[in-house]
Figure 1 (cartoon, rainbow, N blue to C red):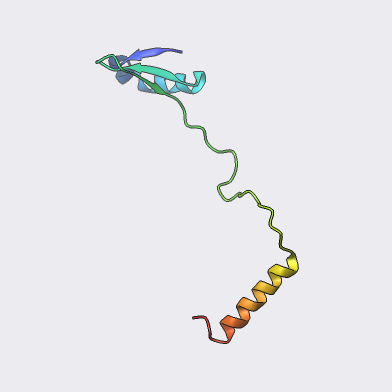
Figure 2: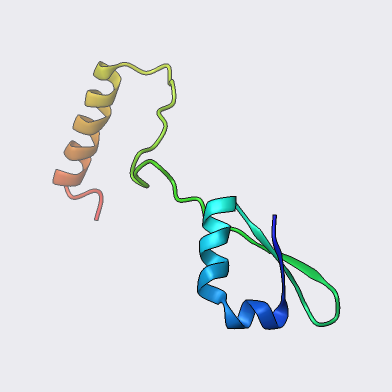
Length: 80
């Protein structure tokens, strides 16, 4: 892993980011000696709309009954 000084990083930011992409990360040393790591962000490989399912002890009939009950209550005006 390569370590760059603050002034080197300012002069060659584009090259520094490319190297971080290739090597996984690079280190920057600030003027006061502190070390910082720059690494590329890992993007998720799945859709943000893909959700994990859960197992519930209800059946298709239970779900349909709940929908029918809700629609009946809504159509009768009891739910606004």
